Image (cartoon, rainbow, N blue to C red; front, side):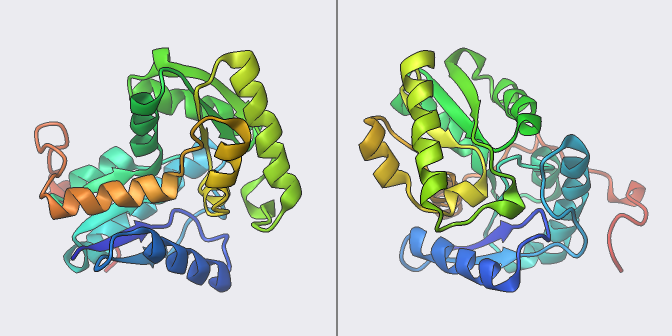
Length: 243
């Protein structure tokens, strides 16, 4: 059994949506594991810029500090993965990023993959993530599905069709052999199987893959290297943490 913290990076979702996501997340992990969404005390409404990413990163570090003893693993539940490296420095428990886990899965099931991001402004952020994951040569393209986080309707057939149309362009024009929805709000629509069947290539689910990775790491006692992610000198962190 593993207790997994799903670290939220924003405060733009209403309580019903948070409850829905927690329910879906618990349906996706192995029997016996549990997932609890951890909401930050203060954070942007959504993460769609580098400024918002940096703000969210601080809050994720605070979340881990406050809840470290309660969980066996932490999952950075935003595709932009704000503060992933910093969060890994804060704990010796496993910390998994939703995008990074999915990128590396895509690189195992296909030679080239594309990411469907949500805005023109988030496209460069995805390119930076791919570069940091050392997968530049495996990226076919980053395509935009115009869908700001706070406007995403999880029951929208038109949005599903937009992902199919954009994904088909990535496959036929860019040479993508697998696709990734580049936003957790898109991922929580849970339409991956249908889109994969429509397009004939894997349409990978960052929620399922990321939480599955966190579960596996917790069960097999896999965690980030303390050499790569050394523990910070907490005496220098001043008032970073809430009293």
